[in-house]
Image 1 (spheres, rainbow, N blue to C red):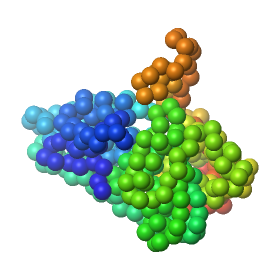
Image 2: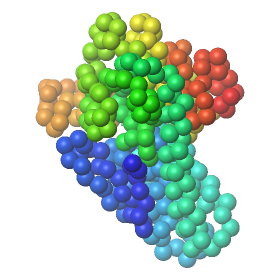
Image 3: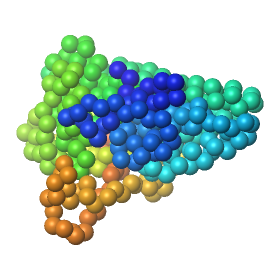
Length: 341
Ligand code: MRU
């Protein structure tokens, strides 16, 4: 199922802040609405953020009154700056905005033709993401055996992508292949993407899922109740994988307990020209920690630290499942060259 759709100048996508209790479709018609949706995580997950950035520029182009190609290009450049300001860590947001801009800059037609080209490029980004996720599913399913229990963190499912998911894609394919598998979903504080979104979409699709709080993962691994971990990624650089806060802890636990730890992500999430130290880890507002579901749970005025992502060193990663292949530790040193081997 498509998580983001273009309909004559309007972008349709589920409001993920309302799930699982309400299924509300957002109708995004302006750049401001798209920026707000990205900022507050109505639209979220690295690959879906890429498509959202591209469609945000498509909205600007489609509704533009610009009379010349140059005028429209200037509007797109300004809009891309606004979109990129919303969240700093997931590289797909930057990658997709830059890809649409590059298309626009290199386009020689008149303004009306450029508008069409921008919309088409955004749609292409979305279509490619969907296809890549199905390929990730196929590539990763070979790692999953009948009877496996797979732990995942955050939501790297359909809701985080244009279609099918990344970490959940191999799980979906294995399930379709008839393997009797189970998923354990970390609830993923503070914003509960595991509880609200991963549990929701797996239950909807009939894939057995058990929800745990984040602090239960060590216990569950020590009891040998997990055979495999698969998580998504927000940015893969030369030396680490950035993903939702808590992923690093899960990776250490997996290593300690001899459980393979895999990352599933499309090539659009690779940013091999950078290292861990170059990346800004998003820090979000204190209320996400002091409150749960809008109810205050911590003393008023307590000091809070709320980083949204952490960096897992590649030494903890058993493999990275992408659309073309699985990269194994023997391939990781080659990431330093700046391109996927
Ligand atoms: O803050 P979020 O919900 O956008 O973070 C999402 C994650 O960390 C996902 O694991 C990651 O984007 C991979 S999604 C296929």
